[in-house]
Length: 292
Image 1 (tube, one colour):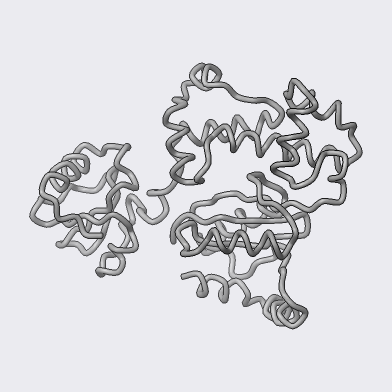
Image 2 (image 1 turned 90 degrees about the vertical axis):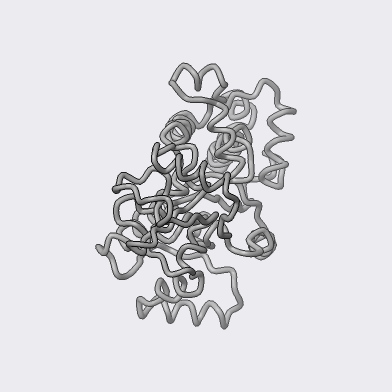
């Protein structure tokens, strides 16, 4: 919404002058004289207070006729994870079997408080929950390859089989012993010039690509889990990595069609239509227009 509170406007304007990182994503400033809007850390020449308006979301700035600034790229960077959060995520990916503590994060120059706030705001879960999902997904993949459940539990950092079994069943939906043929849906987050998106994938391919602020997104997740008879947990597989790569290339203008594999949980008729779209290389334009 449009910010009209005088004190907030003064605070936000000073944050804009000081390029304060903590205000990135909190407000979007529209510049009346140029017709563009920016985030707090923009390096462009600062406008006068009388020439700016503040909004709480970039969609409101767009709806009011403002264009994204080419310097700070607000639709892309406003929701990008801060460097400390990116470093924490990298540590999780590089050490999928370990539980990172606050002490270990601080030793790496990472503030646990910053990480916790970002995950709660952007994922709706804690950083510890995010770690657990990554560890359980890693264990799930090893079990599918035939690894012993006991070895997997202790190798993944659990001190007891009961603790491992309880967490595994809660996230995956079945016990480690009966999970070999169980399907799971992995969810990951990516940033695009149109805003942040969630990408979901099974072993068979991408099954959902949606903006994080989509209305009734939780209902969409529930329907997807019901259709595929699978639980959603944080993680990443080759399909997600490929989708991220192709989407990035698309927005850079280096790609017009997509080759990433899809897992479409629809009826026989729906799947035949989707295959037709894919064959003509236009399913990507259809999805983007549908989610705009």
